[in-house]
Image (cartoon, rainbow, N blue to C red; front, side):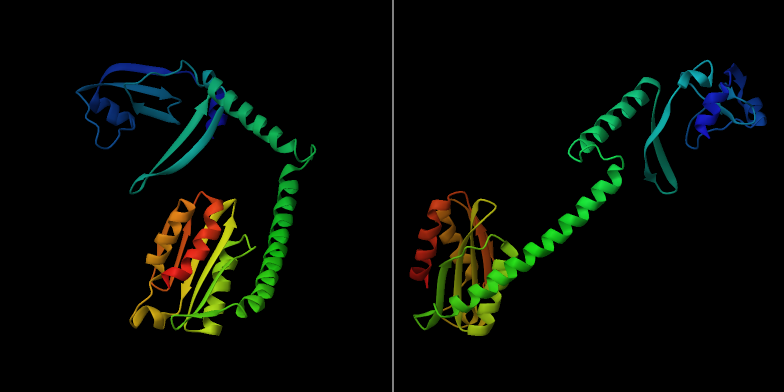
Length: 261
């Protein structure tokens, strides 16, 4: 509707110092909450389209506005919404920027004529690959679980396991720790790994060991071990994790865990 009115090139009609009562009779739009004097300025762009009280500036005809593009819309108060738009040269710049971004998208898509369809196809491919990677990680974790079960050692009455894992997925490492804790029981598990090129430590402890003395506390342990990887972390008594900066300290942290138990 706005674009159509711009193209119609409606001329400005301006009346200054009109008595406010006369303006009301004309049906001029007045904003709730605004304070108006006895005399007002009435702006009209086609008496059947837009007539309002205004103290601002205006074009001499709607055609001067040129391009018009809404760029946002949202609520500003109860029952009140705000529309923001760009016009003229600003609208031209907006469209040019959009075209530049579209061309940047098209380039890696090898000039696809339908970039939307091409991007959608890529998204589907990424989802499929993610599922495959997730499946491979779970299979790798499953194979590791069998090996790790045989590496538990009794330390101070606790089934203890400390190991550096080849896994690089934090969620898979957490799941593996929980599964081993459930299957072995009465245990303290400490894993070191490298996730996104950064060292990570994970500790899982059976709940009975966190409640009966002498108690173990994963959160306290992780904070001490994280010093070896120049990092920090925390968590609950039965599970904690930490990240750091120094990958070279990962083996030291894993070895140190036994001393804490």
